[in-house]
Length: 106
Image 1 (cartoon, rainbow, N blue to C red):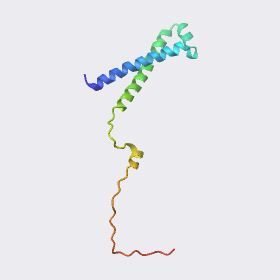
Image 2: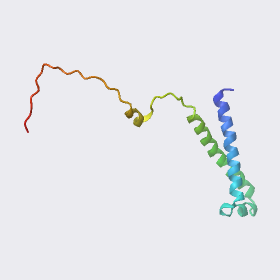
Image 3: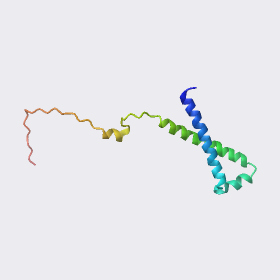
Image 4: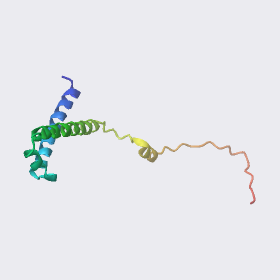
C-alpha cells in the first residue's frame, strides 16, 4: 500500500476517533440540553450517529490537511511574497565615469 494512502487511512481513523470524543463530550456536558433531546426522542440515536459521522468527516479532513502540510521540505529557502522580499542580492551597477553630470539648479 502506498505511503500516502496509509497516511490518509490513519488520519481518517484519528479524525473519527476525535469526533467520537467530541460527541461524547457534547453529550456528557449536556451542551444545549443535547442529552435530554437525544434520550427523549425517537430519532435520538440517528441524530448521534449523524453528528458523529459529519464531525468525523470534518475532523478527518482537517487531520489529513495538517499532516500533508507538515510533510513540506525543511530547506531554508524562503516561501511566499513576504519571505522573498527579505532576501536581497546586491549586484554592481555599471556607470560610465567619463561623462560629466549636469547639475540642475532649482
